[in-house]
Amino acid sequence: MLPAIVGTTVFGVFPFLNTILVSFTDAKPLGGAYDVVGLDNYTRMLGDADFWLATRNSLLYALIVVPLMVLLPLLLAVLVEKNLPGIGFFRSAFYTPVLASSVVVGLSWQWLLSDQGLVNTWLQKAHIIRDAIPFLSDSWLILLSAMGLTLWKGLGWYMIFYLAALGNVPRELHEAAAVDGAGAVRRFWHVTVPGVRTSMMLVGTLTGIGSLRVFTEIYMLGGATGGPGGADRTLPFYIRDVGLDPLTGNAGYGAAVSVALFALTLGLTLLAQRLTKEDEA
Image (cartoon, rainbow, N blue to C red):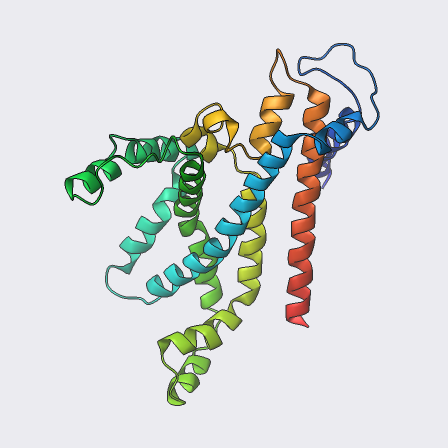
């Protein structure tokens, strides 16, 4: 166990504790002399409108993505669960986006959603719209497009989770419900969902943590500024801007925002664990 303990300490515990210590200083990204400023960084953070905007974007991202990511992969798993001829092809096709890097997927979505991209071109040729939809220039559409990218890339991954869980749901329960006259929809809500509830909690927790840490999707679709005027920046994006810029960055303030992000993530995780325990009870 020693190598694992050393690795966790060096690459996990030490950076975490160091981030907390740095948050009480005015350290610069490239190092050098610094002063201890106490709680000044946290005071500045509470009065920083850009911080609250990034927090809103991160929470909104989680509130929209998490419920969809919990439900949609489950529906997808139910569709591909049966051993039908050729079903392996569809399982592989749904899983393929998981294998692609986030940058490649982001570039693909840039091409799809640009003003001259495939989506706008098709909609205009079909006479559904007249002017191009500003997917990559409107702040709200950038945020929603990034959410769509996250969902599209994660569906196949969490589908695998649910396929494993569905295999543990007794077939006798479905048969008994069918004998009692329950249709497919009622069997899904009253047999399938209770049978995979633990997996749903796990997917919700992992997706929530991932949503609060989202960066690549916003960067690829909104550009280096994080949307027009930085309106779509999430907390990780904001940490990069305020803490890592070699010229104007303040590593101490960036560390304070990182601690706030950790506290937000921890609160979400503890809430999910509590809901899971109440459900099991």
